[in-house]
Length: 129
Image (cartoon, rainbow, N blue to C red):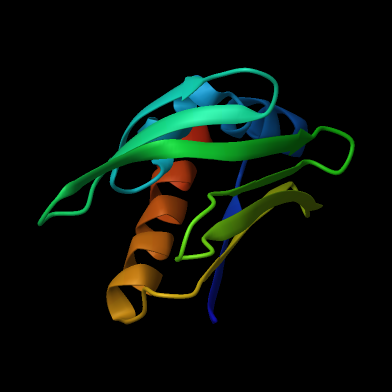
């Protein structure tokens, strides 16, 4: 199994940051390549992603732990794809960490996508100016 991890410091309150990131409707705004996300029953979410050479669509589980400021998600199937996002208080702001694990995909493009996702988060949640 390949594991990927990256973090970013953002100058924003951790509770406000987590509130934004845990809203399923906001997932396509910051997750690189995700084009659509709709909440389903209980902890289910339907997602669509553009992988460049193809579009993939499916259902995944999506668990929110507000007390720990943690999101976890995954999908069934041969890829054994799952991940976790955590927001921690750090100095005057927050540290956002994303961890991804998958059986099939590998390569620098995954790490690049993870780092782009964190850049997107920083650009969205950090106050301007």
